[in-house]
Structures are given as C-alpha cells and as structure tokens.
Length: 411
Image 1 (cartoon, rainbow, N blue to C red):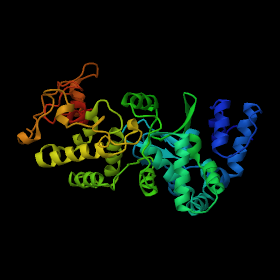
Image 2: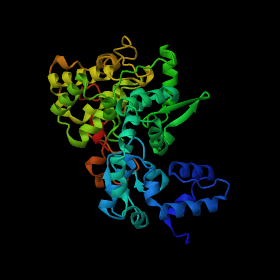
Image 3: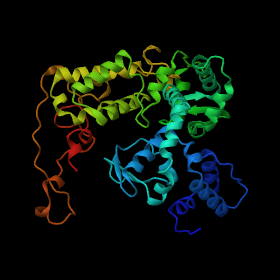
Image 4: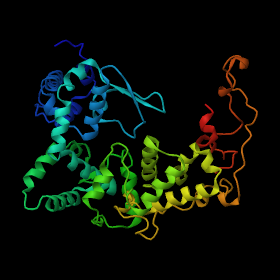
C-alpha cells in the first residue's frame, strides 16, 4: 500500500500503545503483539474495508460531525463554534481541523476519508437510533454530566435501574452488549487511587480539582443523590459538545427566558447556556460566569434587565447538580460553594451597583500606537490601544475587566 495515504501518515504519528487504544475504541481485535508498522497497516485496512463496523463504534457526536462533512463534500470546510474538546475523529486524524482562529473552529474531511465514509454513514446512524445505541449514550453522558465523576459501582447501579424501568423483565445481556459497543464507556473510564470511575467528557483536566473539593466538602464518597430520572439524563446528555443540565427546571427556564430577552438566540444562546452551566461547576474566579454580558452593552445599560440576568444566573448556578458536591446542588447543601451576588465576587471598587442608575457611556481615550510596528500613520485605528491594562476594571463602569468588556473589541 502506498505511503501517500493521509490516514497512514496520521496513524504513524501515534505511539504503539495509542494505536492499541484506537483499535479498542474502534471495535477491532487486532493483536497488539505485532510491530507498529504492521499494526498501522492492519488498522488502515480495517478502516478502509469495514467502515460500517468501526463507524458503529463511534459516538453520536462523532457520527453527526462526519455526516455533516459528508453532506458538505470533500475538502470543503465547515466553520463551527470553538468546542471545549475536539471529537474522536479529529483526534484520530480522520477529520482535519484548524483552530488558529480563536473565534471559529474549521473542520473538513479529505477525499480519502469521504470515499470510505460516505456510502454507509446514513445507514449506520439510522441503525444506532433504532437499536437504542444513541439513547443509551445520551443517558450515560447525561448522568456523567450531572455527577461529573461517578464511581463505576454507582454508575453500574444507575444504568441497571434505568434498564429495569425502561425494559422490565429483559435480560442485562442486551444492556451489556450496548455498553460494550458504546465509545463513552472506553473514553470516559479511568482509575483514581486504585478505584474505577466514570467521568464527564467536560471534566478534561479538572478531575484532581473535583476530588480535592469533594474531600474538602466532607461529603462521603458513597453519598450520591439517586433521584435523577432518565429524562433528566437525556436532557443533560444531548447536543454534544454543548451540553447543558437542568434547563427544564424553574431556574433553568427562567435563565433561558431572560437570555432571550437579552438578545441571545440560536447557537449563541446554546453556547452561553453551556458556558454558564460549566462555569458554575467549580469554585474559583467566579466572575467568569458573567463574562457573557460583555457582548451585550444594551443589557449593561439597562439596570432592570441586568439585574434579572444576574439573579437568573445565580439562581440557576446554585440549583444545578455540582460535581464538587457529588451531584448535590449548592441549595441542597446549605449554600456550600454557592455563587454569591456579583458585588461579592468582584473586588471592592470593581463593580457598580446596577440599581444606582444608568451605567455611564464611555468616551474612548485617545489611542496610542505600540512601538515596533513601523510608521504609525500607516496603521489602521483598530491597531490602536487605549491606556487600560487587560485586567483593569473597564472604564465604562460595567464591573467587568477591560479584556472581557470594551477591550474585547480592541485587538
């Protein structure tokens, strides 16, 4: 086989142990005892000759991405929101991507991958929807998004309870078959202090922090609320990678309503809801959860709407299941790790009370030109920067840092 294959070139970049992991996720039983070069060749042949089989081991998000790119055509890029984490096909090199622009994520597939995937992608997705693979995956990811990190024993108990309720009297063999095929089971399983856990795809590198905060909270390791329904899990596990938990609660509905009033809609609404949920999970520099307001100057100048936005975010953040609290909310644990009102988050003097009247309009200071860029007269005004440091309070009085407010547009 010619080495000109882009797939082979990409596979050669992986270490042998990583190739073995890829084989496991893709459902092939290639022997790890072979040399790396042979493993690359065999895996390439598997990808080329058995696309229906390996595609059936991909997640709904992965398949949807491939389907969208197939519809677009080979070598034609699609611009998406910048995701919190790349997809498995991107990681593996089956999908090309460019994230050099911080505002957009560019993805496309080569002719080689298109010719392999296009003939069977529709059938694979239809079968996964019909046989319950997608449903099971949404439930798994949803429960993991609710709890953040869940011991494998508790996870197994939750899945068996769901199976008993949804398919009474049916053997667990079918459930095991679905779980064995589900890529989430392989990608989201890890070991901590000798114990197996399942973790949310959104955890990324926050696992150690979650364990630290759980120990700090004093909640026993086996104390996990078990009152979440399958419908709640589906809601929390759909629309990857922009998951959002508990939008159908009173607090979630109120948050959606006020964000729509603030002018958010479409993908922008989905993204800001996801970011608010994610930012509510871990204590820290809590003002980040309000950064979305920096793009809505009309909200900052409307005290009543600003107040509604702030209170809706706070009520939602304190009512959702928290990773650091084993899936309990701050409200359920007497305000533990609760999100305070912004005046308590921003440093003294950095926040202007919205009830004190209209936020003053900011007169742009006279720009200066950074040295080293040639003749200043040749530069466009957009290259000019005001005398405000990125982390200083924005002069407009919004209470946000300059880089998150008006400085966002001075590049």
